[in-house]
Image (cartoon, rainbow, N blue to C red):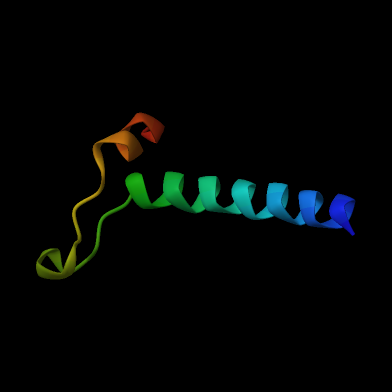
Length: 46
């Protein structure tokens, strides 16, 4: 059970990193609704 939870945790962390990278490199089409990104997320910018 613990091994399965570790694999699932690694998968979720990887997906979260990919989603954060995609969000840093794109903007909302409606600027009014764009939330501010944390400064640490800008390190993922290409």
